[in-house]
Length: 180
Image (tube, rainbow, N blue to C red; front, side):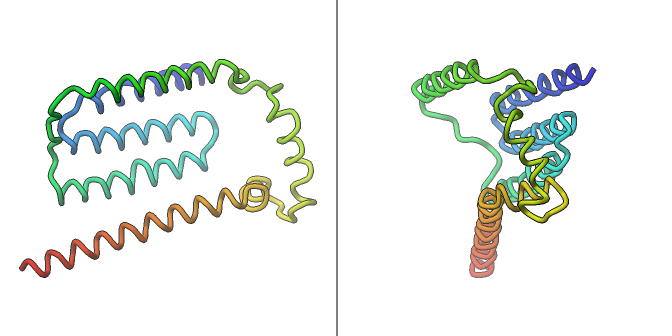
């Protein structure tokens, strides 16, 4: 039953992507992007990755949608019509998709308990996390200690994005005060 739910959600995500590609109204694109992000969060909940799902829902479906709608309010909601059909970017994109799909053929089956990651890394984290880190919660130990640089990098990216948004909003506010 769980696999069926995930398949339905993934199908809905594919429909959302096709709808995004076919849209000319940028407001519709942003809203559909929020729908896609919310569907992705639902898939993550179905896969028991609730912590990642909360991040996806809050950042992807929440904050990003609000910020993009605000940006569209400032610059307009209609996409400019292209002068010609972009065949070269389409061909490059399809080639990259083909290479990525070919690359996934060598990966272990989804949730295979004998996959290399599950054979030596996960058991070590579960058995040694408390001793090596002193942190009783395994998830916290992995995020804060074993993957500390990764977590720090993610924090720096989010912080930098926040500073960028503040700088952009401040310059927009100054521009509107000077114009009035």
